[in-house]
Length: 75
Length: 440
Image (cartoon, rainbow over all chains, first blue to last red; front, side, top):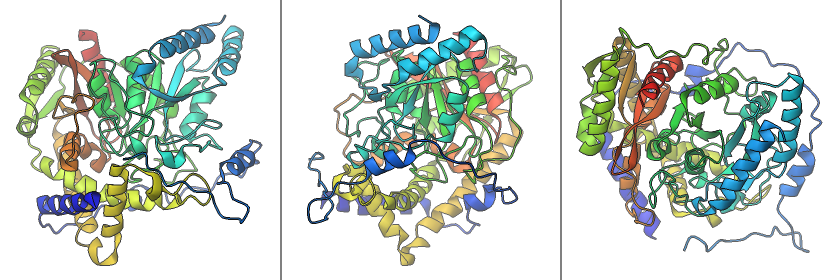
């Protein structure tokens, strides 16, 4: 598969460019999160959230299977 | 007819006459109703800061009732059930959403060509790519289809198209603007920002969308900043750094235009100093190895069972490549070899940039190393395409703010200068852009 071959090449090249280093890793959550914040007050959602989210759900056929589409548009 | 309604009518008319630009995926059917409401508020003297302005939104930001497709077949029919925090803030200040813009599929691209809805044209350089991934947001501003647009920037997705389209782009400090409601590309690098025609609009939008958000754990706990009233073009005693490494990787024609921009800043009182960013070339590898893993993780929810289609079944080549690489690297036995190594280099790049920024007020340089290619010119090697991001990814890896403003043209193709500052140094960036804008 062409994409798989290209992917292996990409990974090899990117890894080679970096070489080796021994430093601490940057984990963004540890650096940035506001751990002392409060949770805020809950509030009632009066929007049409549930109606929209149900409409977003995939359709099912008579056997209860999801109707999916495998796209050929990329080719 | 009120001013908002009149603006909207003019913009819709222009969009209709220039459909070939393909900047929008969907227009807001409720925009007229919203505009009328805002006009009533203007008449009664109760309108907010964004009253009268029409805002376009990148299709990876949730706007209730409109489709957040990420320009992918995967979410082709996905209607947002809620507003992202930035949209809530825009509505509160009476901005009207005009529509959802085109983009590279799931923000995986730098050209604006990988959209399921077709490529976007560059209104400022006919026949060429507008850059990406915020291609439609950038084209919409450049073609005068809206006042301001929102984009997202993971490795240059606001700045790259802003440079190619000759407009203002601003990526804020990581954590200054809430990402709640933004569909991730890579959560540790993503940031929502603006694209606009002028600097004051960029300052105004940042003033509105900034701030701590209880729904988003990485937002910073700092007080609201007043960017508009603090705008100043005075650069006396400013030190502006320019890295010699930029010349090594950038088209000499672009460097020439950037140098002209630096000369203007120098003649306006700033001192230009040489700086060294020796790890610039490591940015691309560090960035992509991080993105592959985080993108793979972020896309696991697109399994087609709750909404949309299964992503692997319907996505484009670049999205599939990133998912495959992310899956591979995420396996336990490989994580140390690639992802952890990338996190270590991220520390190195961040440290280097912050050290440099201790000695200068801002770093100025080119935004994209190459001029935008012609639409349809196939770039088949992904590594060549990744090269477009070389100069923009360091700001995301370090979490620092960065802006872009047009400083010249090469054969009628706009060239944007990138301006980077310390964390929370947005005012510095806006003020330098203000100086350059006054010079135009």
